[in-house]
Image 1 (tube, one colour):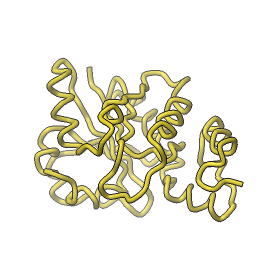
Image 2: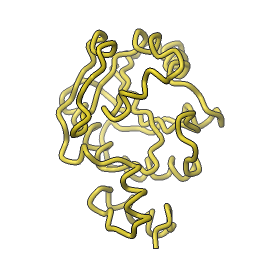
Image 3: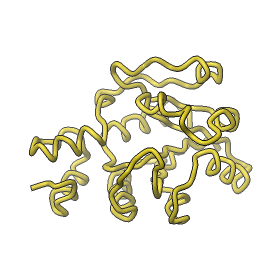
Image 4: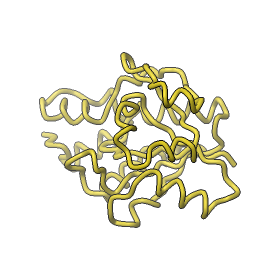
Amino acid sequence: MKIGIFGGSFDPVHLGHLNAARQILEKKICDKIWFMPCYGNPLKKKLSKAEQRKKMVLLAIENEKNMELSDFELKKEKTTFTVDTVKELKQKFPEHEFFFVIGSKVLKEIPKWKNYKKLLKEVKLVIAPMPGLNKIPKEIQKTNPVKINPTLSSNISSTLIRKKIKEKKDVSIFLPEKIFEHIKENKSYGFE
């Protein structure tokens, strides 16, 4: 089975994430998408609590076919590196072929990742393009990544959503309804 590991902070999970996952499944690039929230991110200073982010992912995908939550990294309760996660998953599930789903916004950060060259050999990338951020570095191009089409909401980012909430702007168009309601009820990200 072809599994797309959709890793990230998901702080919060949004329509861009879901639209990319749907497109990957529709195009049969992968048979299943495993949303895998990280416990911590060495390149981000502060994340919402792991349980909060996990709950939002579960809410977002509960009616989605072939999308699952994987708490593989959360269970470790420490920051883990993608290259180590992929290696462990390949050992634990040798029957699966793994792909790593990444937004084009993150492409420029990959050279900062631990053993990123090894990661690029271990797993095939599926890139979800974002407007203005479609340039794929040469080293990554050599690995023949799969590039999906930009989705309607591909310019959405969790950073943008958190910023707009702080500015007291409407973010409902960027989020699944359940996630918007969850953020509102819990007054997450300074929602008032």
